[in-house]
Image (tube, rainbow, N blue to C red; front, side, top):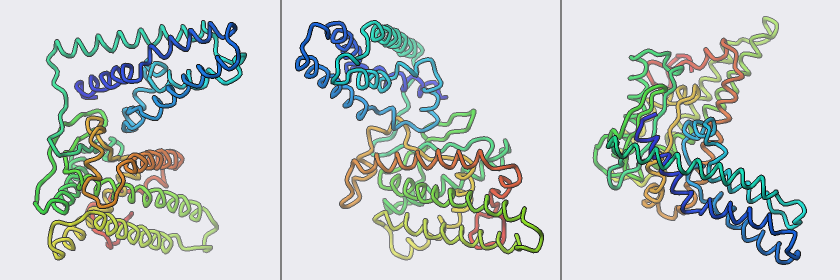
Amino acid sequence: MHASRLVRVAKDIFKEYADFQILGMLQEASNLSAQRSGLNDPQYIERARLLRSRAQSAIQSTKLNQYPRGIRELLEESAYMQALPERLANVVLHGFPDDKTQAISSSELQIYVQLANRAAAELSALISAASQFHLVDITIPEGNVGLDVTIPREVFDNRADEYTRILSAFVEVAAYFNELATGSAEPPRLIFTATTDPVVALGLWGVAAYGVLKLYKLILEVAEKQISLCQTLRSLREMPKGTIDPADLQGKIESIVEDQLSRAVTEAVASVQAKVEDSRVNEIENAIRKHAPTLCISIANGATISVTIESLDRLDLIVSGLPGAPGPQIKKELELQRRAELRIEERRKALDAETRDLLTVRRSGELGENENV
């Protein structure tokens, strides 16, 4: 992970500790647990419900749940998992039912208090050390929204030419949406790159980012269906010879996927209020359609598009140019995308090697050609 981004994660956690008053909430919870035997039921219930309300608010407001899946997984696999603000708030939320005899013990809460204090101190030290190294925060240009394009190595089999070809498809699609939304042929800004599983952060105008995310959501749906169809094809190939012609069925699957991809592109383009002439809209739609198979197969194999953690405070820019589009809706859409990513990952892991070979990226990127989809 990019060092500046790791520091940003630490800052976000540390900020939520302060914003949600996590340490104070835990200490108050510990005090209530220790004092509950001396409180009558109404007194206990009133204080317990206030604590639960604060905890619920923290859980609903945390930015960390909006993180891209890869960063969220890094957090959950780290030693700080139990000290995340949401986790600690959940301890309080579920630790104080109205029946005071069922409340969490004060001694157990003190363990969480110590855990939170240690995490806060260590995160503060990390942030301070980063400052001494003069690490600069990753910044998104004014008016832009950052989108992470993550392309796992298994998607391009560690081949540099394949990686650049696939990345180019994502970048060009983003550029087309920038033009569609602004009327100017402006390529996305390169915000940063990181290795391991290569991540490239692109800066786009807000409404253009909406178009890209809309297309991504629709292609996720197509990719999920495609994996299911490939599993069906694999099963049918195991049937007695002569029962069905696998080649004929594969052709039908390709036709279905091509049709759904074409519809997805049309819907995504239509979701953005175009600032170009109708003739140019058609050209842009056709250009995006040519890249759709590459995007779809890459996404089916694990590539993702997500809002950068540095842009989570700018979600309003994504919908500000969309007439009648409520701001909070974008958070729900992003959550639905994360769930679709998990479903695709689970389905992909269940594929055998032969079925996985059906998910081959087209080299031409042209819809309608007789190549494996």
